Length: 161
Image 1 (cartoon, one colour):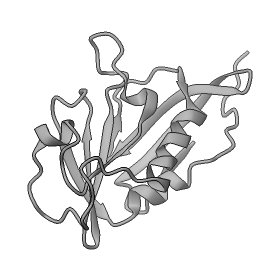
Image 2 (image 1 turned 90 degrees about the horizontal axis):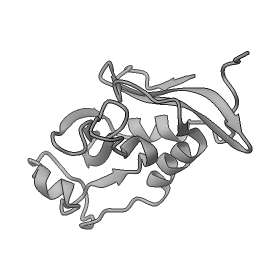
Image 3 (image 1 turned 45 degrees about the vertical axis):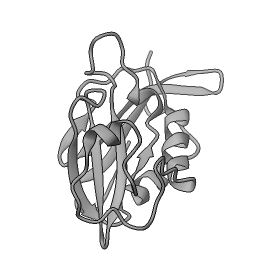
């Protein structure tokens, strides 16, 4: 399954592999500017939990340093961002996708933050447990619209013998 914005710059793709009791497990990737993140994907993400936390990040935006309006066009101090000390930026909870599995970041280590600049939003992301950061600018509310359109009721998308 896939949900992507109309410019194809941000989206989420997932596949349910297994159901255990009431939990669906599978793979999830973000699509950011044509790149799949994380680059490899384990088949053990708890899909409903990840989706719930992504959505809740927008229902209850938590600005660790506070919010006094838009982030604007100013430079971001990534050391402060990593410590939760940047003003007007909130973190999007990636749950299991943000965890580090051993010494390797190809399966997780994905962290997302969002700030606004007038009619744009600034999606800041890390794929290596906050060692490096990248940013993409999107039309305002793009990320929220994609995330809020994720299903609340997960269904099996593949069948295995």
